[in-house]
Length: 330
Image (tube, rainbow, N blue to C red; front, side):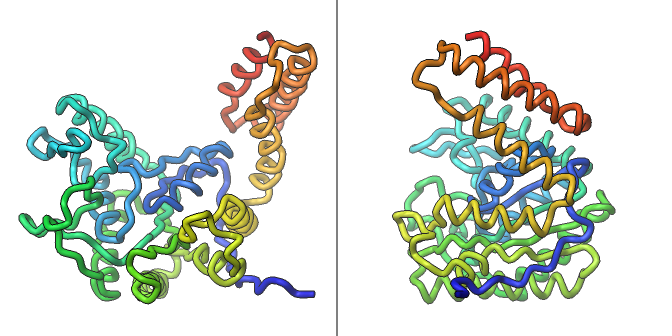
C-alpha cells in the first residue's frame, strides 16, 4: 500500500563532501539543517546574524559579509526590552553594554565573512515573503525586537523584487568567490499569523522567485524541496509540533534524511551512519555516571571514534575524543 506521495528530488551535483565548506543562512529551519551539518562534522557557519526570515534581510546580511563590512557604534540601537543590537540581528546578539554588543556582533561577522570567501556551498532558506519596514527610515528589518507594531509598515515582496535583488547579490557573491554555488530551500514552517491564505501567497512568491533564479543560473543554483516534502509528502498533522506551524522533530529528521540521500556523497553518507551512533552515545545521560558499566560504555564509544578517525583522518573528532576520555574516567 502506497501511504506517501514521494517528492521528486534531483540529486545535487556534485554532492557535498566533508572537504566542502558551508555557509547556511535563513529561517529557523536553516538553523536545524545547518546544525545537523555541523554536528555531522562539516565546517559550517550557520546564521551569523541569527535567524532571518525574509529574502531582503538575508540578501542585506550577505552583502554586508561579502563587502567585509564591520559595524560602528552608531549603527547599534538600544532596544528597551533587550539591550544593544541592530535591526538586522536576532535578539540572541543583544547585550546590556554597547561595546559588548559591538564586539560580539563584529566577531561573528568577521568569522562569517571569511567563511563566505572560502565556502564551496551557500545554503539559503527563505521563510516568508512578508517584510516589516521601519517607518522612520524605510529600512526593512530582520528582527523587530518586540518593538511596538506602530513603528513598522508591513508588505509582501513580489517575485520580481526578489529576483532582481538576488540577481545583483549573486553577481556580487561570485565576484568575491567564483566557486560558490547556492542551494535554495523554502521553509515548511507555516506563518499562521498571516492567515492560511496569506501564508500560501507568501510561500508561492518564494517558490516562484527561486524557480526563476534557478532557471537563470542552472549551473550555479539548486533547489532542495524541503517545503514540498513536509507539505505534500508527509502531509499529516502528526508531523507538526503542538503549535501546528512548525514541523515536528520527526518531520525535521525525515527532511534531513532526504537531504543526506540526495545532497551528500557516498563517503559522507557512510560517515553519517556511523557518527550518528556516536552522537547518540555521547548524548546519553546515565542514571549512575560513576558505574563500571557506563565507563565501559564510554571506552567502547572512544574505540569507535578512534576507528572513525583512522578511516576519515580529514574529519576533526578531537573534541569528542577528549569528552569520551573525561567521561570514561569519571
